Image (cartoon, rainbow over all chains, first blue to last red; front, side, top):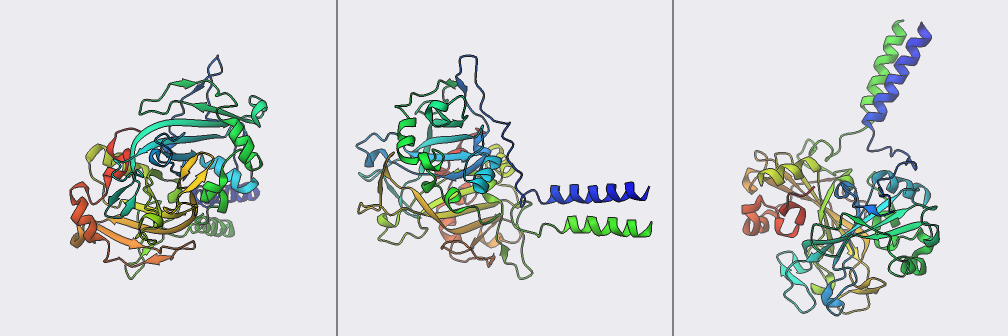
Amino acid sequence: MRKILLVVILGLGVAAASSLSRYSNPVAADSSQTTAVFDSDGKMKLPVGYRRWVFIGAPLTPNALNNGKANFPEYHHVYVEQKNLDAYLKTGAFPEGTVIVKELTRVLNPTFPDGSRTEPSGRGYFNGEYNGMDVTVKDSKRFAATNGWGFFNFGHHPLPYAESAKEASAAECASCHIAFVAKTDMTWVQFYPILRDGDKTK
Amino acid sequence: MTYLIRLAIVTLLMAATAVSPQSGDKGPVFTNDGSLVLPSGFRSWVFIGGPITPNGLNDGGAPFPEFHSVYIERENLRYYQKNGKFPEGTVLVKELSLAQVGEHPDGSLDSASGRGYFPSTLNGLDVMVKDSKRYSKTNDWGFFTFGHHAEPYESAAKESAQCAYCHIANVAKTDMVWVQYYPLLKSKID
């Protein structure tokens, strides 16, 4: 009886502690789960809920600094799920099933030739309307030919984006990632402070 | 038997104190002298936008160097989208990061994806808290800076007198927030 009570009490304590400290103790990623959904043709369905994932950085390639037409116009907001970020920070690699979303936005009403404008906080660039979405999915079997990652483009235009997307050709996306960032799990970690330096607030 | 009850109490107390109070998860936390405790966990909140004011376009010294990544808790974002104002207790976090130093005079960098600005190191934290009683003098919002420098940031910050006037002059009508820069605040999307 005593033993059972002891086990129950300790169990309750552990459960309470883990529920209270969910922000300070990242859970290990479950590599069997992915938010990537594919239809019978192998097309990927548009991810949902990604704006609630962890934002890791926003490179900006303004059209005005790229001969009027950036490859990715113009802000690149990049999101990854918490469990996959935690796994990356722990191991240096993303788990199978990881989905990384890059959502584009235009810059807000340019007034200078370089696309910038002046606001009370200074001269610079400010987010305009949403302008498209690109996604990478890690699946070492499905995407073995492109270093374990598949690339999908849901359109570079305002909302709504395409409902589904077929895998982009290697020439469109993977070739550049293979050429430049094959050693960092195909991801441009140098542009994302959290991936590069870790999350010191946790 | 008594020792088991005692053990139960101790175990539950330990569990309850496993997390020390930090601003954010359940609204702002203040020290006894009214300073705001550094928020935590905000990088898991909803990111609403990232203006950038590069030093290279601001005579070498932007007031907020250089990327401004702005975060809000989801429930407060939903409330704003529905009501056009933020609920009491809302915390808005603006985390700065420097841009990688490029070869162009404006500070921009040539990268594989094009010429532009790319984040380098995190560079500071500013916070707004909505509390209509505590901050009635500054249109219901208190302003705090935890430093404009690399981590670690200050662990607590006194209310800053320098910030409110610019918000009052420019964005008093939109609950003191520059909603025009944040597409998620302007739309009803999830």
